[in-house]
Image 1 (cartoon, rainbow, N blue to C red):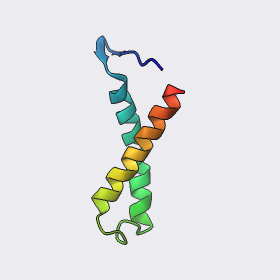
Image 2 (image 1 turned 135 degrees about the vertical axis):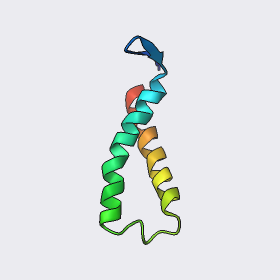
Image 3 (image 1 turned 180 degrees about the vertical axis):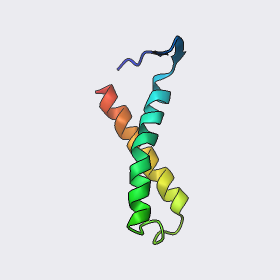
Image 4 (image 1 turned 30 degrees about the vertical axis):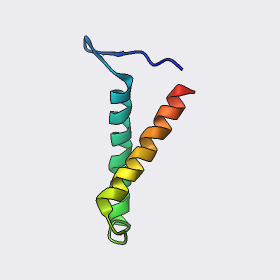
Amino acid sequence: MSFTDVDLFGVYVAPISVMMVAAWAIMVPLRRAASRFGLLQNVWHPSLLEFAVYIIVLSSIVLLVAR
């Protein structure tokens, strides 16, 4: 498993930062769907749930890229 730096307009960035942006892009529609169906009103701590789902999405992306 070898992650290399990503050249983004002449600036080298760590690959985890690109994966974090991708996870955030996936989380936007998930967050909207959760609020639309009222899931965020039924949990004890909505921001903690969002953070946990973000970590799950990010780790899934890392595992897929590392494969």
